[in-house]
Length: 240
Image (cartoon, rainbow, N blue to C red):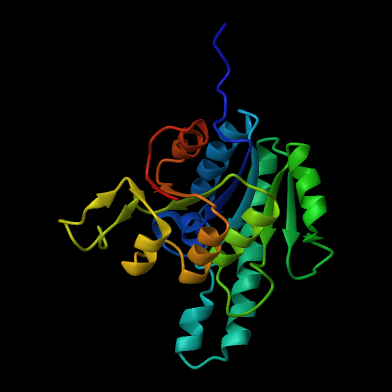
């Protein structure tokens, strides 16, 4: 009988970009892509690790971009928060089709579709091995879902933030544009801030630094990487 896969962590916060759900089409929600992500999370759940998830809304609406085009920043950010709620419900549906117990908690109250975000209730769900999806960012304009991920990770006492991206780690410059881009295996928070590396926004990085919260960045193009990260395999870039 094979030995069961043991997780390297007890509880994690998985940060997904909204663009990850769009797949190759670049916008909206791709059914095949979201199913693959759900299977990747399901494999991780089977190890016994407790998973909270924060997801962005960039595949539907990007508040900062709308603000740059003249829309009121607060209004555009609230629209972005609603986009994260759409993504959260899509993710919940994909998880439940794989028999993963899931709860969506929203920072903006919308009782008909999601629970309100209550920290103690979220922790209780995690203890019962339910996946908790945190929707609507922090509930406040001017804060990104990166900051929401850092904040929720602290609140639920996660051991690490796992940021799933389109590239296989953190580089000194954009590897999509520069063939000579150099990948880092490990970084510290100050290096990320000083080099202005595009990992998370500076508010989120500072929050992680102040609370000693490690960040692992890895590629989501292969959803099996979620399980590898949970097992403690050396993938991506670790910031600590």
